[in-house]
Length: 293
Image (cartoon, rainbow, N blue to C red; front, top):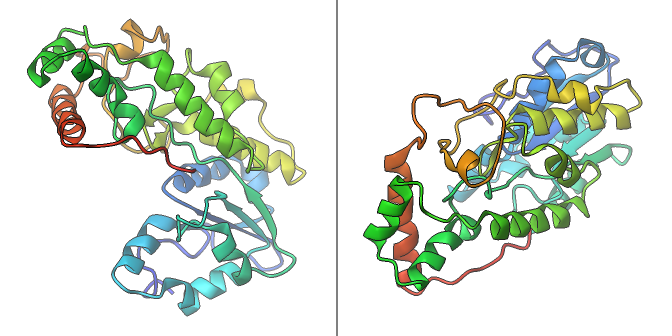
C-alpha cells in the first residue's frame, strides 16, 4: 500500500484493530490537524480505526498522469470506511469532489462533511484575490508600488479589513450551507480573542478542534464544549502560514497573544514581495474572479 501512495499513512496510528468501525479522513492538510485532535481524545479513539488520506499528494500524482483512484490501495481504503470525513468540494476540485468519491464507498458508509477552513482576511496582504484587494485600492488611489511598500513598513497601509472580512465571511457562509459541520459562527464568536488561523489556508488547532468536537457529538459520543476547545494551545499540530504582523492588533483590534514577540511587523521581506507580486498582477490586466467554493 505504501508503495502505491507513499505520502499518506493508510494504516491507523495505533494499528488496525478488528471489529472496530473505520473512520477515513479524506481532506487536504487540514485533515492532519483534525487527526491530531482525535488523537487527544482517547475514549473516542478507542472506539474506531482512524485513517487519513491527503488530497494534495493525490492531486500532484494525478497531474503527473497517475490514475490514483484506480490504485488497489486507494480502492481498499475507501471500501474499508464506515464513516467518511471530508470537505464537500465542487467538481472543479477533482481530488476533493465528493461526487467522485461516493461510488468508491460502501452503500452503508456514513458521510460527514466539514467546512474547509480557508480564510485570508486576517493578514494585511495574502495570496488570492481577496488578499490583494488592498493593494489594488492603493494603486487606484495613485500610490506607487514603492509608496505602498513604504506605507506597509511604517504600518500606514490600509488592509481594508472590514471589506475583506465581509467577503471571506460570505465565502465561509456559502460553504457552511453545504456542509454538516459548520465554521462561520465559531469564527465570528472568537476571532478577536483567539488565534484561529496561521495562514490563509492553514487554521490553528482551535477551528479543527471545534469541528472535531462536533463530529464526535454527531457520532453519538460526549464531546468538548466550546469553552474546552478554546482552552487548547492553538499551536498544537499546526503548520506554517503567513507571518504575523502588528496589523492584527493595530488595525484589527485583536487581543490574542502574538507568537512573534520580537517585531511589530513580522516577515517584512515576504510581505514586500507579495506587494510587488500583487501590483504586477493588477497592472498587467488582472481581474478579480471569485472562486465558486
